[in-house]
Image (cartoon, rainbow, N blue to C red; front, side, top):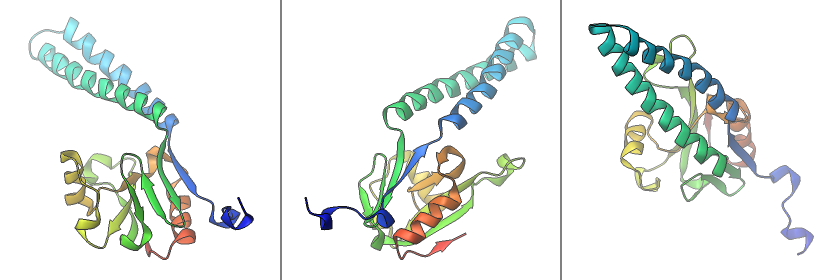
Length: 178
């Protein structure tokens, strides 16, 4: 391998990894709420028992899904990889920088649910919808809301949003909108 084949340090790829600390913090909040609903379902009567049972079911499903997500994160800790050629998302093919119209930082919708601590996303918006990878039914909702299914929630990944946007500016000519 010649020195020309090696990647120069200024064009090194950037790995965006899932933030396991965020997952643990969320779990530490959800488990006591789940246990509280179980206690309400077990010790209350009437309408409160029904509310407790419904809450326990909902939070049990959320915790189960979170456990599945945690296993996936352990198996595949990289959410996306950015390099001078494009971006590769977990579970998607690589996309060249040329297909993107812009990379945008925005607030997660619906805003009413996230009033106390607003959540943010980074959207890799393609020039045409046909440039997007084939979407699952869940990703179609993201396409309707954000214009793309190639999203990163900044609170759930490392490095932070500003660092990711700086890497996009450094590695590509795609406009970045904050």
